[in-house]
Image (cartoon, rainbow, N blue to C red; front, top):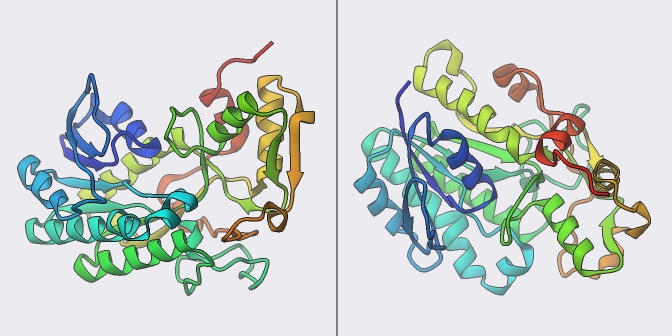
Length: 310
């Protein structure tokens, strides 16, 4: 199947992995605010925080069959420092992409987040985790931006797919928002690494996303009975429901690192301006029905980090 795919945020954690995986299979282009010295695919330098409407211009020039919107200001600190700019990236750019897709009758996959849900430590989730139909009740700014994004996209393009991704981890470069990357960076800088023991997520290896999304996009393009359920929100996460501390210990053991350098703490102890949700259980039944087996942590640790330190 030959497709033209445009990826916003193509230098980010998710976008760069999609480019790597799809560039030999599909015609791929993308944009980000960073310049690429040696772009492997067509790349446009575009700061969506300055003018989110320009995303429609690059889409019109490239004429993709599918738009995958991964660009986001996901760091709570950066979002709080520039709320207007963050909203332009997280909400307005997605809105303009959806408007273009509606005019040209193209497909859109716009990444959302599990942080749109309420903290299950404060409001009990149904057995099996939050379903996609649950009422959104985010507890902090990033989650609220994603709720606004979903509303803006679906008003323009009701058939858009909105993957509500859990916390992502995997190999990364500076500036990419990977939990495992953050752990290893802090380990290189400090004697101990603070890690939450009461923050539970369906953490997902970023390397698993290209294959999962390829399957979903293929079903969307084919349409028909197979594409049922590929509209609106879709929970996306890993098979394990782990605390950040639990994941960090698994990563350290896999890499032969000293677990004593981990400093477990509760979220309330961190002194954060916005305390993250402690529990975000996801119902992943819809995802499993579409893609099959849900990725587990241990096999992907070996794939993301196929080496052990001495």
